[in-house]
Amino acid sequence: MKHWIVESDVDNNKSYPQIVDAAKVLQQNEVVAFPTETVYGLGANAKSDCAVEKIFEAKGRPSDNPLIVHISNRDQLEGLVAEVPEDAASLIDAFWPGPLTIIFKNKKNVFSEKVTAGLPTVGIRMPDHPVALAIIEASGLPIAAPSANRSGKPSPTTAQHVIDDLEDRIAGVVDGGETGVGVESTVVDCTGPSPIILRPGGVTKEQLEEVVGKVEVDPSLKEGKGAPKSPGMKYTHYAPDAPVYLVDGTRADLQKLVDIKKEEGLRVGVLTTEEFVNDFQADVILSVGRREDLSTVAQNLYDTLRTFNRSNVDIIFSEMFPEEGVGLAIMNRLQKAAGYRVMKG
Ligand code: TXA
Ligand code: MG
Image 1 (cartoon, rainbow, N blue to C red):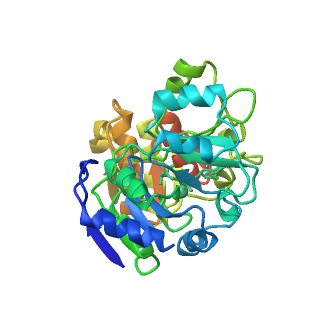
Image 2 (tube, rainbow, N blue to C red):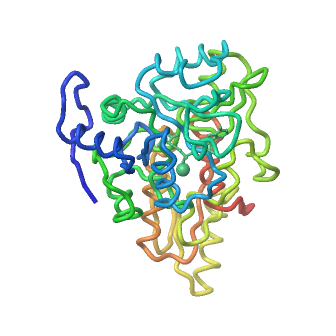
């Protein structure tokens, strides 16, 4: 596997041999991981069946879960989708490049059918990361890219996470340092009468509403029941090896649960925050960020879940977060990591 190292702030007016090389590998219909502003993506030529097939193979991803197509230029869009509705155009003006994926109606014979998993729609985004934009631009292709993790694992926020999951399964990784946002893009369906959030992410519901008015969240996300409109949301995801339990209660409630499991002889982990990190006694206590700035929690969430795997805990108890701003995405990922198990204090 190739490992290209680039600075995270490449200048898009210059040419970098690492990026030229990575783009060539993409043109040869191989898969290459690269950083975006959210998480590392596993890219392939979105027009090629055989290239896209390699993504599903490397990740072990179910074939009914469609991929997001990444572009580097707003002007590419018209050639790729059936229409750009008015709300979508406003959202693009406000948030591209950025962590927002928009679902459009398909145009026939543009992408490999494997990208859309047979749906009449396709998700497209323009990432806000100079390395991602440079690679897409240099390849001259629309790039299908899911998160570059093995299916079911926490998404990768560093090149090392990608290597841990996919070494020898992919052609290469472009290492541009740690990603910034830490949770994936918000997926918004703009094919209906009004936009619906299918997956909360880096652009918040509140930010979307400032641009297009009231935005609904796909109700099936809440309880983890019913069929979500975004196929990927139905799978177990983001899960560390040990079971995670969210604790809806006080710190004392959480500590009580830890004590019970310790008495049973288990090795217990606690996922907490800077503010409370000294308030617990457990085998492994990890702070995921600062409660007063939830963007720090988003940024560290997946790395923290992965760190629990290296610390051999038997069970993890986690604090919960307010579902406001990026907290909505954080709680969505934590609920999925926990298989929707919540313990009341
Ligand atoms: O931030 C991100 O979006 C990252 C980076 C690499 O760009 N990518 C990412 O891709 O998270 P992935 O494949 O891990 O998640 C894509 C999500 C899945 O939940 C999938 O079901 C949904 O988007 N999706 C893709 N196309 C869709 C479509 N046509 N209709 C509904 N949901 C779709
Ligand atoms: Mg993913």
